[in-house]
Picture 1 (cartoon, rainbow, N blue to C red):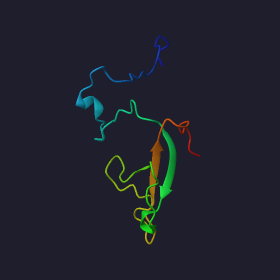
Picture 2: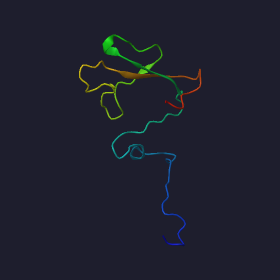
Picture 3: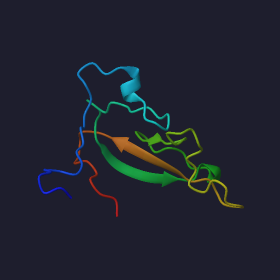
Length: 100
């Protein structure tokens, strides 16, 4: 390394004030969504729809991944019930910050 060099690499992060569509699309084709003003996720659960379970009241079920694939956690497994993640957003309690 050159002794006069200050840094080897640098990163510019963030978006311009008026981003164009090209600024919001990543290289793999997925779009970035703004989460501004969305309530934080406060609860997460899993359900087994093939066993007759339904979304708990106030929860949103994740049906597909951001790339459009099925979000069934047992997708591709033989003789396994379908399993989906559900989440709930709200301001009524502290948000989830870690899942362990």
